[in-house]
Length: 375
Image 1 (tube, helix red, strand yellow):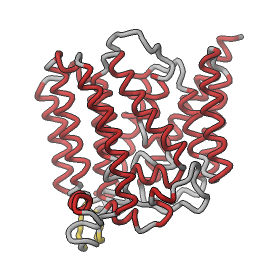
Image 2 (cartoon, one colour):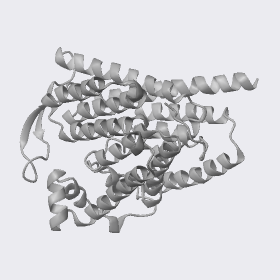
Image 3 (cartoon, helix red, strand yellow):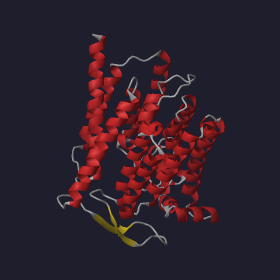
Image 4 (spheres, helix red, strand yellow):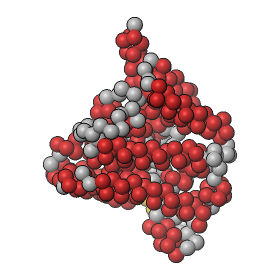
């Protein structure tokens, strides 16, 4: 009976995973999904059934209850349900096959992206190009035409490729030769020629070279200073984001940085509740505006306590990457944090835009002290 219950829970989990991935692809298309809310309630129920069918230790239940209280308060205060959904998803990830789930995520995302690409190129559905003010150049930007290949924004297409590339690197970096890494860069660069999406391309380059360095120089990936530096960089990015929310571009340093970031701090600073002095422990219900600076959006949408919980999750993944010698995860976590300086792709209502939730769901149930390469 216990085996049947676990099997039923696993079936529910995989149905929910596939459904969430399809919803992400639909969101990237020109189609407006009128059933999104109903689908999210369904996947929440399916992940919940997986939780019910899974056995947890006493210490795990203590952590689950603590996190559950935080996200429940967040929901009742600001009425945003994605924090609760994300928590249930992470909890449901106990006993998952990490490689299998990442391969499924990669396959479905790739198929969906290629379908949107094909529909746009053939003129069947979706726009091939987009002409708009993308906020680049002298503030507030100039009008440009860039390729979006069926997605709502050129950055969205390049971003999806970036996210898929990080999964490829995580799954196969140990077996890859230098020319495989070069191929990953080449594919991203070819797409970049059309999308002109600088952030995803530059961060992808940093991630590839970071993984290559740690792959070929074992002394570095065994050095605690590398992992401490990664954690400090994530913290620094969060702190700089908080400062940027307060000052915008009013200081010389923030002005120069915001010029590089194409006005990300300036745009968010114009929203009063997005400034750090107006952040609350749990965000207000009216905090629903969209902007591209990821960490500011995190604290603006959800509040200080849920935001810090997410940041601590990032640091915990870096800690586990050191314990398990999972150097690819270290580079990806830091890369995603750098990416969030410019883009808020990871901070959204769509769970499987943020692959960190998958790694967090796997690693939060792993031993804290056992060392061993999970690759």
